Image (cartoon, rainbow, N blue to C red; front, top):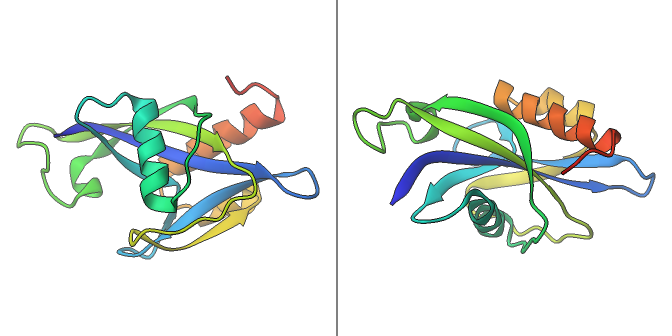
Length: 149
């Protein structure tokens, strides 16, 4: 059973110039760029959902998951196009995360048609939703300030 909770995950790495890059994904069903995202299922804790979604959408297996402070509420119809959970669930809580990956070979699922590794400013300019922009800003600031917990 899917819970009315969502995770939003930014993959990041350092490039050869020792600068942070962020991976964003172009959806197959909508012409928009975003971080990885997905819903909490069954008895999963948020970290488990993050790891599962990363694996399902990129083929990657990750260990280190960093939860950010950014939390958003998303209308249910923006996620699935309908009242998926039940008639009285109107918004879903979205929790945000950063995950460091190096030397990766991403294998996209059908959910996305492409991905790009970009600087903070280039990634932010392509993102559609404010929740994605806020989470990316927080992750970037935490990395710059060496304050990722």
